[in-house]
Amino acid sequence: MTEAMHSYETIFIIDSTLDPETITAKKDKFIGIITENGEIGEVEEWGKRKLAYPINFKSEGYYVLVNFKANVEFPKELDRRYRIDESILRTIIIRKDEV
Image: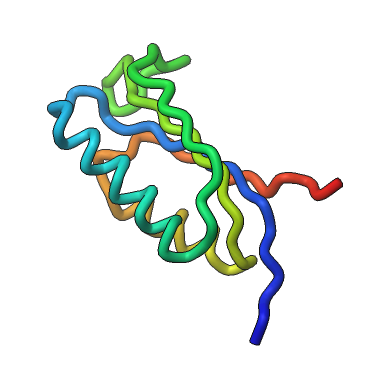
């Protein structure tokens, strides 16, 4: 049962009003979920940045970009887990085009 792995990129924004330890724990939690279900690539922490528009009355968020490879079903599960966590303000998961 070998499934094809595809390349993906995800950005998630963590509520920056949380304390630094909680932000690190949330970041590590989602990187761990990705690692368990695929192959982790480059991880870039963009840090605290101003949001383009307020989300839940917040004007800043902590940005994290993760490149990974996973099977086709995993991004849907990752999106579900993002939505469950109230400290995640926004997310996006993009399948990168294979060249």
